[in-house]
Image (cartoon, helix red, strand yellow):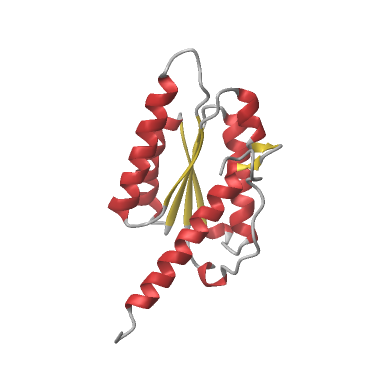
Length: 171
């Protein structure tokens, strides 16, 4: 479903109380910081709203979206979080650079998910122009930072439930 059909900031009332002790690292691209810092702020607000203590949230910055993969790996080494949220914005330009950056970052973050065995959330906007980015960073379609935070929480809850099930004895 595209963001035109769903507001990114609309979240259901879910109970994440069993996640209150979890830690989350947010890695933010400084490129297009008017967009990415809005994503960061919405992500932070959402995590706190759902019970993640500010003491359990770390924020690291990288120069651009391409650096989110390595930055996420470094945040993992430094903070040992339960989940990582990578936030960036690559706006289509006159060349195909956006395709190369977006493909590399999505592949890299997917690989980190598997390698680290923890949620590494792709919170990267891939708009055609700045107006589309603004629409998704607090504008008419909400804020992708909220969606990224909710994804991290939902994946942590899934991991908790699956871990709980695997500890049961019997069928």
